[in-house]
Length: 369
Image 1 (cartoon, rainbow, N blue to C red):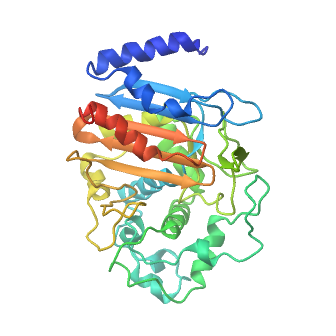
Image 2: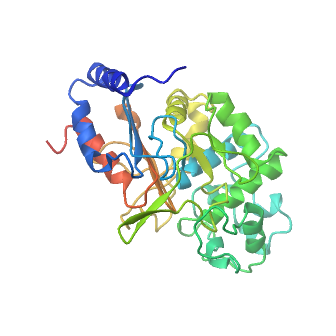
């Protein structure tokens, strides 16, 4: 399909917005992102879905400093930890298939795991109560601090091997909460072991292809390519630098998925209509874990399920997540009772998309006027 001219697309956005939510103007939403408008700096892609309709969709800035292609709804960003909801869904699909159970022990799947793995369940891994040590802290040299495409990177299997060499956990599994990239890397490897497919293939076959998310992939350098790719950036001494890859950018289960607004809109539809799992099967992901220590990145008390934070916002039920990795910041904020979803994908490190998304939500909740 031929891309519509920018002006015509903007008119459609305004028309959709006034049809879907009379009280919120496109201009008010656009004003929130005024600081990201640029023809030569990295930026963001913004999508607002209200009552099942995409009422606002806009790109700001460029995908990279070499081509200066404009960001749009087809631009694919590294989701970072927003990927965790897809890893959780993959595990839940295997539970649906009867191949996994939430109370299965880590040593049942990996018999060579140390004895401490016998106390860790699939549920512990999903809700961050496993107590696993952080693989990032265990990584040896020569993993350096270079942030470009050629940097040496740890793979999922290598991270799991590091964990297998440990003799302890941070705390008794299930006794408290601690955000764990290690746990989600292990979950990705569990999906491979149980399904007999690579993690990326399982995601593609059971989630992405099933939902028509045709350009969403688990990116593996040298094995596949990201279409319409945005590259990460950081401002250093007042100048934008491409900081797209780090030593931990190759792991998949905790943050390796690339996606776009157009594909994530399909994901939102699937969550709303229970396309992949029934409402009952989805409930375990939306039950807050009862363990001390659950907090947002800013330190505020929170709630967590399987790949989703669950603490409400100003009395509105919410399922949400953030993503943060070198050069990228992302968020998805879903308010199921309000039929409102805000998705923001940024290829620059100086933005807090969660805060911007909540400002958008305030417009719909008639806050802050």
